[in-house]
Amino acid sequence: MYKNWRVELSQRAIELFKLMRTQCLNRGHGGIKELAVLFRKMDLDFSKRICFEELRLGLEKYGMEITQSDLKLLFLSFDADENRQIDFAEFLHRLRPPLPPSRIKIIDEVFCKLDVNGDGAIKTDDLKVLYTSSSKTRTGEWSNEEEDKIESFIENYDTPDDEDGKITREEFLNYYAGVSARVPDDAFFIMTMKQCFGLPQG
Image (cartoon, rainbow, N blue to C red):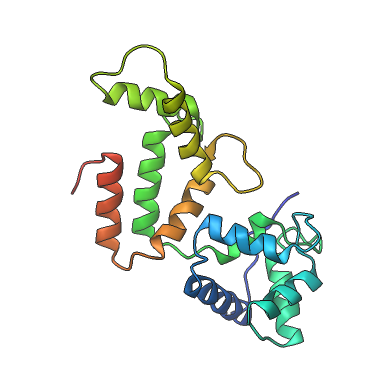
């Protein structure tokens, strides 16, 4: 289903998303995994979609009191494909903490390094090639423990309830948007990303 992310939000909708995002961050729900937990709690019928009534009840339980007109506006602003339901991609897109250009740039640089074959997704083979090329002692078959570590790495970034064994650029960005929200200083975030993934400083 086509999602029109480019629809310009009203000022009130922006304010409501900011309020909801702040509530999420204050409760530690800034990352993709935490937002997935929140989404599941609102999805009362386990349909992997949130209807209008589920959003109302979810916000009520979350302690966010808003008017009926604001609730309608919030729901319509979430629903990018206009099918009268909110899926997790729509939920995450609106609530993901914003990223300044400098942080997006370093996240993209790390993604490109891990996406060894440049096909737009980080997969098991990419990580094996990268690890083998950076290790002077790596030889022979991959042990079960090594395989498990690579799978765990991918699972950490993969979209909850929609795991496909690879990490897209969007999923990578979603993950680090949550991490970024907990790091106030741009320079420190960039330095840490470079250190963790072996990119040159400066």
